[in-house]
Image (cartoon, rainbow, N blue to C red; front, side):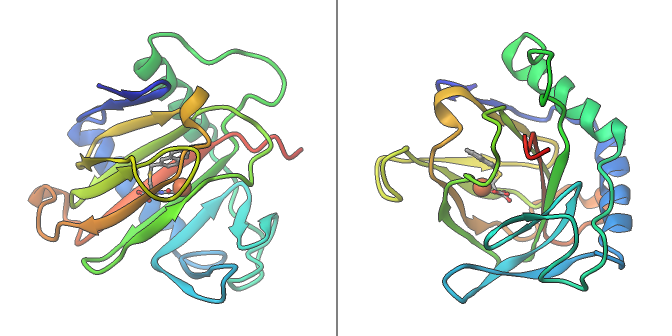
Length: 209
Ligand code: MD3
Ligand code: FE
């Protein structure tokens, strides 16, 4: 479904086997060094979702090569298979593979772990220098995802449920849009996945050298 120009939702894109594989990989990445951490926001707060990064470490003031607000260790590399999954996802959503060229490889993954009380406030993703689409993959419990506009955190916005296995691609005019996660719906994930809570993997092109 096309939610807005460049914002395409592909329900249940990941099959059951790929969901299991991705979850196992996320659990391994969450272990130290440079594993799961609590994220501090520029305003001095803390995010209720916890995060692990691959490729580059996201923090309040940009991207870093080490887990600057975690244990300070070097960030784990972005595996080539995950970069390839990003290109595959764009092709599936847009019906055409991403433009080849310099600085177009998916080189950053941010993985957010939500429990039943976790939320993500309305924000824009503006630390990447590339305008390439962001790829989002969801695992576990369903959430309410709020897709807003490019002018403000407020209305108009659309609420869309994101379920385990769903793909969402945000490119073109939707790339600078405000978005957030107002609610997770506990106990709604596939039982056989064995995940309590929700996990979201975003794949990005940093363009940061
Ligand atoms: C629209 N994550 O990691 S995924 C984030 O479910 C983030 O964890 C949410 O917002 C989550 O920054 C939402 C959907 C998403 C991700 C990135 C976007 C939507 C986006 C970037 C630009 C526009
Ligand atoms: Fe975001």
